[in-house]
Length: 112
Length: 116
Image 1: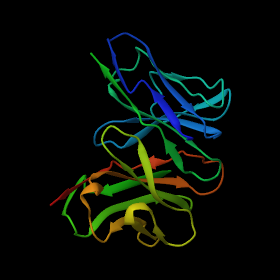
Image 2 (image 1 turned 60 degrees about the vertical axis):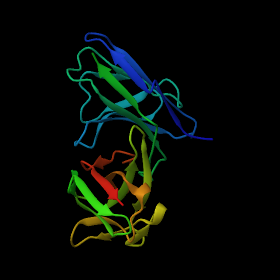
Image 3 (image 1 turned 45 degrees about the vertical axis):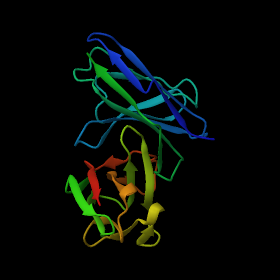
Image 4 (image 1 turned 135 degrees about the horizontal axis):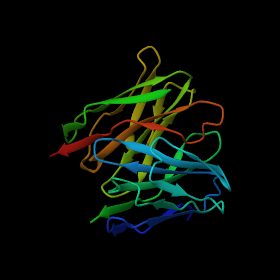
């Protein structure tokens, strides 16, 4: 079955550590996205990529980094510069022109 | 610029009652509009979408929404609530046309509780 796979589902981190969240899709979609979800705040866009080797900052990119070396993969690194990293992170992809997002199951990051 | 406002962070209904979740949007260009549903600790699943065709849109699980341009609204309804409808619902707006891809703006979400 085609879809988006995020890993790990749960992750704990100590303050000062960088962590990388994995996102892989086999839908052959060009565009991929990372959203952050906090209770009562909806989803906020961190980074997006419309094509391999290119990506753009979203609304809350500070403290995060991404890469897009393959069409299928769009990993997100949460760096120690992110002041409040505890959140639920959602990866998504879309077909050009439709605007419709397909989501992974999410990764919950907790900073201890 | 675009924005979404969902009226009511929590809605509670009885099983079998009408479900009405409110969404108002703001967009400087013709919008695409979406409703997504999220169950605890899961990703979002598309319920329905409006992309400038029929103004009354039918989705999965018996949900539907009506696009009203004059009111800038896209409210979600279901005639009869089921216990399995309990979840969080998100309204989202995107730009129609151009290279907008999936740069959607989401509302804050509405948690729907269904009680027996």
